[in-house]
Length: 520
Image (tube, rainbow, N blue to C red; front, side):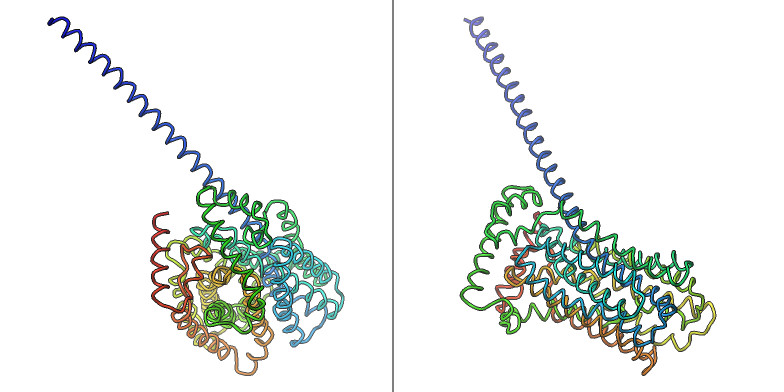
C-alpha cells in the first residue's frame, strides 16, 4: 500500500511537474506573442510618424518660396536700383507689393482648396510663382519686373495659405504643434538661402547678379511638383467630399493604430456632417466669417489678431531692410553688408529649432510670452542705441547683436506659433477660408510695413520707427495673455470646445483632453 501510495504521489508530482512546465511554456509563449504585438505596433507607429513627417516636409517647401523671396530681395534690390535706376518709392513698391498682392491668392486659396483639394491648390500656387520668377529674371524694365512680382505674390498666397491647414489636418494631435512649425522653419531656411545667394553672387556684374539671385527661387517649385506624387490629400477634406474610405486609408498611414483611426474618423464624420448641415441650413461660410457669432468671433480675434501682431512688430522691416539699417550703423561695403545679413539669417533659422523642440512639451503660450517679451526688449534697445551708433566696430557689433536678438525671439515664438494656431483653432467648415483671412491680414500688415518703412523712417527717423514697433510688441504681450488659448495636445475637434461661451464646459473639456494627452 505504501508503494502504491508513493507511486501515486510520484505520478501526481510528475504530472503536476509536466503541467507546470506546460504552463511555463504557455506563459513564455504568451509573453513572446505580447512582445511580438508590441514590436509590430511600435513599427506601425514609427512608420506612421515618418510618413507624416515626410508629408509635412514636402508641403512646407511652399514656405521656402516666401522666405527666399524675402531674403533675396533685401540684397537684390541694391543691384536692381543700380541697373534700372529706380527711385526710393519704386524700391518700396517693389519690395512691399508682394505681401499686398499675395492676399489675392490667399483669399482665393480658401475657396479653391475647398473645391479641388488642399494639395492641388498648393500645386497651382507653385506654378504661378514659377512663372512670376521667370518674368522677373528676364525683366529689363521696372514695369516688367512688377508684373513678375505680382504673379509671384499670387502664387505665394495660394500655396502658403493652405499649407498650414493641410499639415494640421494630417497630423496626430500629440505632434501637431511640432509638425505645423515646419512652414516657419522653411520660411527661415528660405530667408537664409536668399541671404547666402545675395552674398555668393554679389561679385557678378550688376546686370547679371540680381537675375541669377531671383532665378534660383524657381528651384523649390520643382520640389513641390515632385511632392505631389508623395503626399496624400487631407483626410478631412476627403470626408467633406464623401470619400470616406480614402480618408480612412490615409488616417491608417498617418496614425497607424486602427482603434484610434476609427475614433478619429468618427469625430471627423460628425464634424463634417455638422459642417454640411450648417452650410445647407444656416448660412454660407463667408457670411459666417463676415458676420460671426460670438464663438467664431473669438476664434477670428485670436487667429487674425495674432497674424497682424506677427507683422506690425516690424519683422519684415528688419529682414528686408537689414542692409539699410546696418549701413546706417557704419557698414559701407556691399559685400560686408550682405555677409552681416547672413549672420541674421543663421540666427533666425537656428532659433526656430527651439520652438520645434518645445512647442509640444511646454505649450504654445509659454513660448509666445518668451517671444513677445524678448522682442519688446530688443526693439526698445534698438530704439535707444541707434542714435548712439557711430561708424566704429562697437556700433556695428551692437546693431548686429540687437537685430539678431529680435529675429531670434521672433522665431522662438510668434513666428511659428502664429501659423500653428491659425491652422488649428477653426472648425472644419470654416478652416480653409478663415485661415485664408488670417493669412491675408498677415500679408496686408507685412505689405504696409514694407511699403512704408523708408518713408516713415524719413519722416520720424529710424529710432522713432523702431519705437513704434516696440510699442506694438508690448501690446502683443497683453494680447497673448487675454486672447490666445492653450491648444497643446488637443485634437482639432476638441479645440473647438475651447471657445465655448460657457466657462464650466470649457474647463471640463480642457481637463479631459489634458488627461488623454498625459495617458498617451
